[in-house]
Length: 252
Image 1 (cartoon, rainbow, N blue to C red):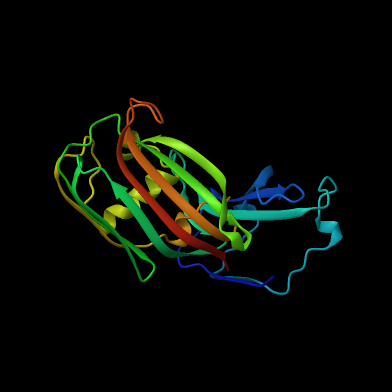
Image 2: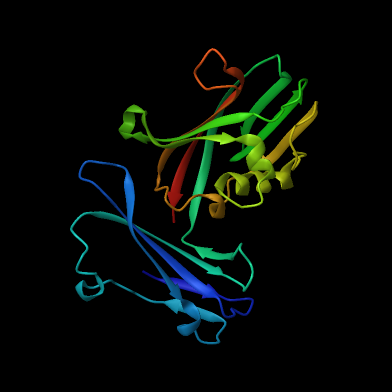
């Protein structure tokens, strides 16, 4: 392994490196975390501007004795945590790249006068006219699935039902809030809920490498979002919108 890093700002006390170790069972494509370690980098790094690693190869002496044979994935994240700050500054992670291939959508005309989704040059574009307010209780089922083999059979990686209004107004960051905050720079979405009637758009939004969860490994993904009111998969469910994005995740 070779690595080159040029530091353009001083790295103060509170600089930490977080490492996560994942493994997968035999004949399984799902990785599970089994070990995590956080290291104080201020006790290691010297006061320089350029750091590098040349021709590093892990030997048997570097491997913990409790590691058993198998397929592993190791993720690292470097961050700066200041005293009294609950949200540490992200600095560095092993880079991933995302290629958005295409998208599909279906909407309820009771809520939208118009809705379009397009993928242009690896960016996502949305254009919609909301004719009925999206009030509190607006939810979304988000499903991440990965393709197994050439048959395009997708296996679920994880799925979660989100309180969409709660994500928008939440103070604490998570993957979905981070995505939404990134979208604010490419459209006219707002940090408030309910969402009133009107014209909303998203132009040239790209899923940058720092927005990709580190626990997702390289592969062919399908990410679907099912927006609704009421209770999912019951007579009380009020369908609002379906969106599905197909993308390829690569690790550099």
